[in-house]
Image 1: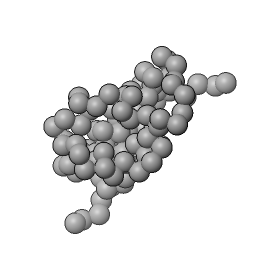
Image 2: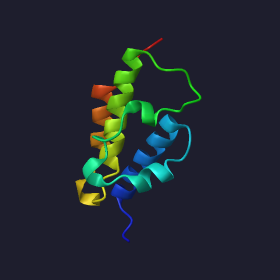
Image 3: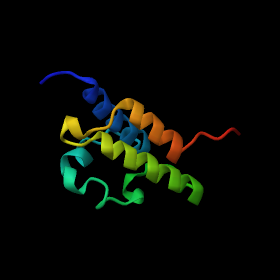
Image 4: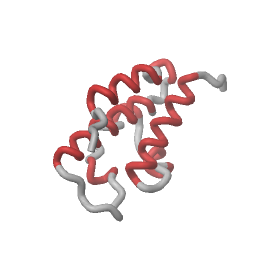
Length: 99
């Protein structure tokens, strides 16, 4: 296997899911196929059950973040976005807000 930037993109997708799920998503990753990555999964299945349910606003941001993470997990490295594209998408769909 050739190590490229697309490997980092995949790792970023795994990291995002680990943060959202509260554990490594190994079982989840092995149970999904690239054709049904996001469509068959609800946000409730993704969230760490130890945490309280997020507000509607936070849920919308989480959906956007999960969608970006799934694009990073595409089986085909050529089909994964670049990290620059990931960064732009996150800035648009889930911008940081100042407290």
